[in-house]
Structures are given as C-alpha cells and as structure tokens.
Length: 378
Image (cartoon, rainbow, N blue to C red; front, top):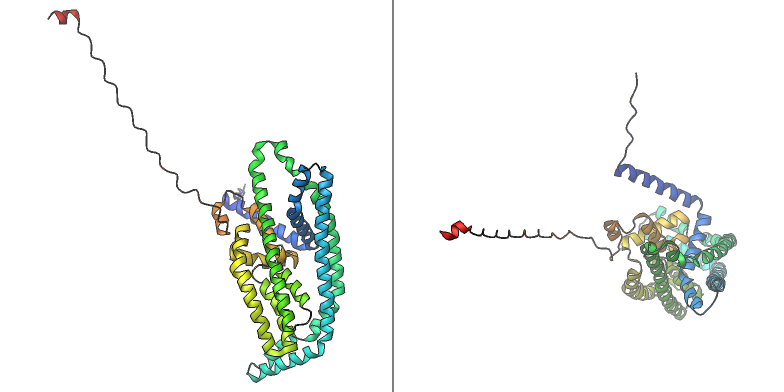
C-alpha cells in the first residue's frame, strides 16, 4: 500500500521558519568565532568613520593607493591613542589597588557590620562582603597581563582587517559606473547607514570628551586618587548606551567611600549625576537619535545582546551592529517594523487616494435628417 508523503509546508510561515533558523545559526557562528568577529567589527567601524577623508585627497590629485594609505594611517593613529590610554589606565589601576588594599579591606568589613546592624542578616552581609572582597580587585589587577595579551592578539587582527577593508572601500565608489544607475538606491542606503554610524561616534566622542574632562577635574578637586583613570573610564563608557553612566560611576564611587567615607561617596555620586544627567540624558540623546533613529528599548537591548554574542567589545559596537542588522533583516520595504525600531524617517504609505471615475461623455445629438424634395413640396 502506497502511503502518501506529508505535504511540505510552504508560504509565509515556512519562509519565516527558514529565516529564523538561519538567523540563529548565524548568531551561533558569531558567538563561537567572537575572537575573530569582534576585531572585524571594530575595524569595519573605524574604516567607515575615517573613509570620507579619502574624497578630498583624491580630488586634489592623490592616487588611489596614497589615499588608502592615508586612511590606514589615521585608523592606526586612533588605535594607538586608544591603546595608550587603556594601558595607562590599567597600570595605574593595578598600582592603586595594591596601594589602597588595607583601607579597602577595612571599608568592606565596616559595610558588612553595618548590614548586620540594620537587620539584613548574616547571609546578605557575607554576600556583599564577598562581592566587595579586595582579593577580587587584586585578582583583576594581577590578571591584567593576560588581558593585555588578549588585547594585543585582537589588535593584530584589527590592524590586518583595516588594511584589507580600506583597500576594498576604494573601489566601491565605482559601483554605479559598473552596474548602472539601477544600483543607486542600494548605494544611497549604504551611504545613509555609514553616515549614521559616523555621526553616532562623532557625537559620542564629543560628549564623552566633555564628560571626561569635567568628571576628571571634579574628582581631582575632591581628592580622589588617579582622577585621570576615571576620566578615561568615563570617556570609554560614554559609548555604551543607557548603562554607560553606571559603569563609569561605580569604581570612583567605591574608591571615594574607601578614602573618604560616606560624605565623599555622596559627593562623587552628586557630581556624576549632575554632569551626566545634563549632558548624557538631556542633551546627548537628541543628537544621537538624529544620527541613528533607534528606540531607547532597542538601544538598551542591543547592548546586552551584542555583549553576549561577541564579548565586551559588543557593548561599544552595539549601535552600529544593530543598524547593520536592521538594514540586512528588514530592508526598506518593511516600514512598519522599521518604525517600531525607532526609525522616525519611515512613514506608512497610507491609503491610496480614490480616483473619481471619469465622467462619461454625453452622447452627441444626432443630426436631423434633411427633408426629402417630396416633403419640401408639401
């Protein structure tokens, strides 16, 4: 007896299932290859940021290879400055932890005793004490060697990726000449995406520099040790949407409690709150939203998501990675989903206006028949 094969599902539901499975497989591959993907994403963002400097150089008669070399050199300069700042901050932090280790132990003990006194119980006090254990910070400081090794390995891939991407970017300007004007809408979308990424990082770097300078001078005036380290931390965490303020506040606040007690802790929190609320909450979001058109919810979720997928670097690259994913997965035709993601420039097409039917022409009057000669005689 022949048994009929079950029908193969087709239609929108089947296509949706295939797309979902494909996306999950891609995310799993990104997670397994995060050590290669994270430097690749960083190199891509840096090349996108620096790429516009190629055009004035070529207009002045520079050959294409020379303009590419200039782009690579500027990206390397940016990486060198960032690496120098991170190494300086890491060394200063390691020395600081060793220096304040005894005071930190006393502060942790006092916090544990205070938690027991207000009735939170021994378990909560022990959990808090273990979380604030100076040995944890000391282990972090001692583990900077392994972190620097991983950083140098990632830097090697970034340096190589930058050369390849800058060389490839030099020929993308000839796409319209190669494929004709029909490729222009796709090029316009790509240019808009790159422009949004550049504006996002320019805005964040500008506000981050202001926040770092103000926070650094404020911490120096309050007597907090190594204020330059916390200023660098404030600059870096400014690139992390929504939660960057908290990440930049916690270390100097804990240090303020260690060296000056609760009054100094409250002073640091007050300074950070005033500076960061004014700049990062009231002013900066206006410029960032104009650059990227992402909802606040999606911005926050993207930080958590990309940090899980490609590691800590995903927190800094979360916005451009989300913009790229939106362009790839949604495209211009899914205006409703793009609007939900925060793209205010997308509008629904609306109902098609009804065109009134054309009025039927009135029938022309038939010409009267001319009378015959017999009728005229009558």
